[in-house]
Amino acid sequence: YAFVSYSENDRHWVVNILQERLEKRHPIFKLCIHHRDFEIGTPIVKNILNSVEKSNRMLIVLSRTFLQSEWCMLEFRTAHHKVLEDRLKLIVILFDDVTLDELDGEIKLYLRTNTYLSIKDKWFWEKLIHAMQSNKKEKFRKPLL
Image (cartoon, rainbow, N blue to C red):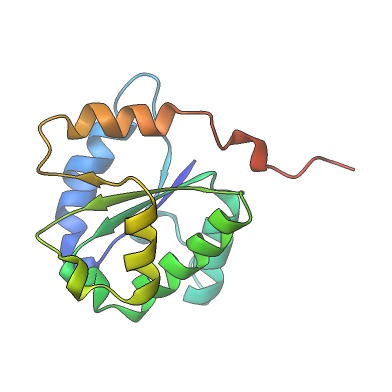
C-alpha cells in the first residue's frame, strides 16, 4: 500500500499515468490517492496521518507546486518522520525541473542523502517498479503483542 503525495496541479499525471500504470499491472500496487481514498467528513490532517500510518511506502511527486503547498509539505514531513523511525519507504519522484536551491532545508537534506527518481530518466518506470517491489523496509511493521 503506497500513499501518493502530490500537488493538485499534478493530479492529471498522477491519476491518468502513475495510478493507471501501477494499479493496472500484475501484480498491482495499491495506491492511496487523496480524491479517491480520503475518508469523507474526516479532517484533512487526520486523513493524511491515517494514510501515511497505513502505508508501507510513500510516493512524493515533487514539483514546484508541491513545494508551495502547505498540505504537501505536511505530508512530506509526516513521511520523513516515519522514514526516520524506519517504518516507511519514501520514494521521491522529481516531476519537473526543481533545483536544490528551491527546496526547503528538510527536503534538500533528504535528496542529498537519498536516491530519488526523475520522470525524465529513460528508465524511470523500471526503476519505480523496482523501488516499489523492494522489500528492504518491510521490517517496519510493529509486531502484534
